[in-house]
Amino acid sequence: MVLTALWVYRDCRTRQEVFAQAVHGPLGVPKASQFAHRVVRVHDRNATFWDFDSEKYWDFVDDPEVFAMVGRGVMKLTGTSTPQRAWQYIMSTYQTGDQIAVKINGNNFDYRCLAHLNPPPQVAKAVARGLTRVGVPQNKIVFYEAGGRDDHGFLPYYINAIRQDFPNVRFASTRDSDQDFGAEGTDYAYDDPSAKVEYTGSLSSEWTYLAEVLVQSQHLINVSLFRDHHWGGEDLVTGALKNHYGSIQGRPSHDFQKVGDNNPIADVNHNPHIKDKTRLFITEGLFGTYHGGP
Image (cartoon, rainbow, N blue to C red):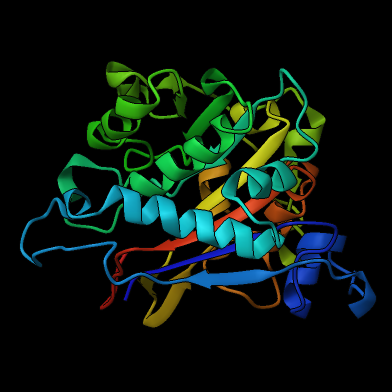
């Protein structure tokens, strides 16, 4: 099944009590009257035509179908009549000169594991298409992956596919080798107190920092993947909030995938650079993974 889910990230972001921590801090539980969010789902069986054999499954995606899916999704999300009006609504706080950071899920972008689930470039192209059509210059759009590990970054197929249509969009990565094919280097904002993420509960002695590319941007779009994780004998699902594992320097000692007494994912998403800058989530399910992932 081909599935793309989109939702706006406004004043309060979630109903579940555990994610209240991401919105209001470890003790906050938002009131129902504060919610201002919407989730839509878009499906099109013609968006992919993979042969279930080639490792390069991203070559089996119909670009116009995906563009149309994202267009329908943002219109339904915002209640507008055209994709352009929808993107204007989503980016209503955009001002000339602002930078938009687009967090993709590149934590499997490793030459050794091309068969693992990586994001097809078509959804990112749809985002660039929507942003540029409402006046955002290409060079103010930065796709980034900053997980700080050898398998976190980009692969040439992803950058090349996007730059075919958008030659001036930018890519930022903490992996030095990505600069060989056009990505910018980015470090972590160690000197900026607002970029520090302090964990709570039993993790209160631990902290981390956000990537500079995120801190230096005025807007954030989170483009995540549906995929399975198999950690410690448990089947877990990665999603939108966990996508910011690729926005921080390493993970805490507590398993980042799990939700329990300690919620490091919520602590990270509670940082103002994420909480206050996020304009849109897109969770992409053009392809899926199972049996352990990722």
